[in-house]
Amino acid sequence: QYTYAANQTAAFRISFTLIFINLGVVTISFSRYSRAREVDAMFVSTVAVWLTEVIKCVICLFLVAQEETPRRFIHALKTQIIEQPYDTMKVCIPAMIYIVQNNLFYVAASHLDAATFMITSQLKIFTAAIFTVIILRRSLNRTQWFALAVLFAGVSLVQLQGTKSKEITGESPFIGFVAVVVACCLSGFAGIYFEKILKGSAPVSLWMRNVQMAVFAIPSSFIAIYMQDAKTVNEYGLLYGFDSIVWLTVLWYGIGGLSVAVCIKYADNIAKNFATSVAIVLSTIGSMFLFDFIPSLTFLLGAALVIFSIFLYSSHQAMVAALGRLRGEI
Ligand code: C5P
Image (cartoon, rainbow, N blue to C red; front, top):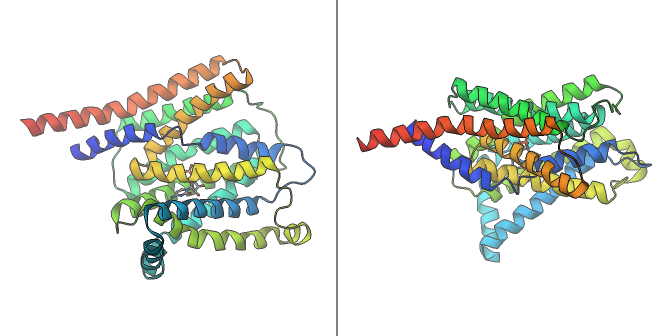
């Protein structure tokens, strides 16, 4: 347990160096903005999800290729993907779940007002913790659960900054609410499942794991387009409604997704959610400078709670690690 705590403390440090590339908040704002704004031609969200998968796959292939000569790159693809179907199949489950989750977030974004969407989507803080306990069999003590609750409250308050709370655009807030809650449960489960695969099995690199996921994610997200939006796509084409904002959303979603993968590898799912929350605080501060927002009292309280929750959560780990070292020395 002490070694675990020490590793966790290190993981926390690493994960916070990753916050600058963890663009979850930008993703959320973009997907919300791109769905809510008034345009003549509304893009097809299933196409956006599919294109995100394609972009992530291209980036990962590029990163794998960077590490190898062209011949060894082809060889690695052959031996680690085609010749190891069982190992490749293992990532099928999180890959499929992420596709459903990503589609559900777009559904939720078009049915909920911005504040409700942003706050309810933070429920993944709890789902990740619950699945950490159930699947990875790690225990969290009461202080840590309390820290997660404080984090949830803090990040929710922060997200209220600059959000008009009564701007309901969708037809059915109930559908949006159910979609976001289910998406959060899927997020927690898929994240922990991926963490288990990444840390517990064959030494396959993170980027190669993502290429393996793409083997399932790209075809299945393409099928989803025709199951859900065949009529629109057949009539207007795949890229109907794609303007620069939508392309930017797709790109950020891809980069955000890969940074989630990096956080899961070097830290864990819980630390990733802390990192994302800090990224939310920082990017809100950034947008204040860029767009002249004045920080509200709600924002300041929220930011303080986020910071407090990190100390609360990690102070316990640091204490256990220090105790472990002390005992080791004695
Ligand atoms: O915020 P949350 O953890 O639920 O974000 C998950 C996102 O990260 C999904 O969009 C998923 O596609 C992406 N992801 C990824 N590669 C991984 C793990 C997650 O692209 N290995």
